[in-house]
Image 1: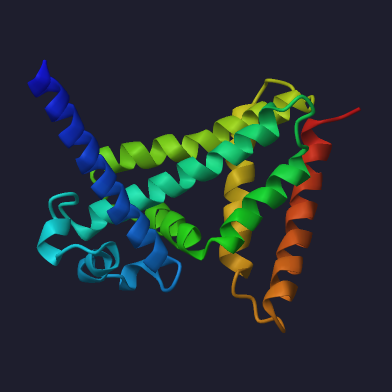
Image 2: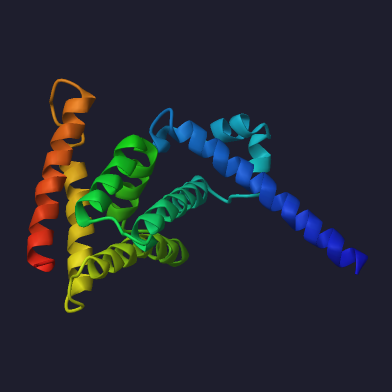
Length: 205
């Protein structure tokens, strides 16, 4: 019994140290592009030796995937609240919150687009990536239904809508306007137009 408790404690300690490594990587990702952050830098930020970091993550890619998945999982909780509250958000509110999340979190946006375009991910990693992106499709599907959309083809529209938002961000994130606020305002205008198209098509009086 005592051995079991000791083993459990050791496992908890290992998970705590592992989380410190993930948090350290996210701190660095906020300062510069994630693909420029090396394992040695993460180790220094976490206060451990470069050799020790490999006890928790076998490679830079594995650490990166874990950091991204945790970021998206954390963000999804806020969107769940928007959908599941007594008076759920409308399509436009959900869409604006989604793009603002990615505008305000450069590292999350970079990691998301990287994984969307990567074609050599290992099966376990792709499985986890699919599971977290599925959360947004599920939530938007629920939102459509709660706002009065018919069940028929609602999944297809959810996929189309989230993909449309990602496309708007990829196309106009670095649009040559006078400042970041102008870029954000332009993205918001496009998102509102897109939201109206889906609202008019799916949610009719």
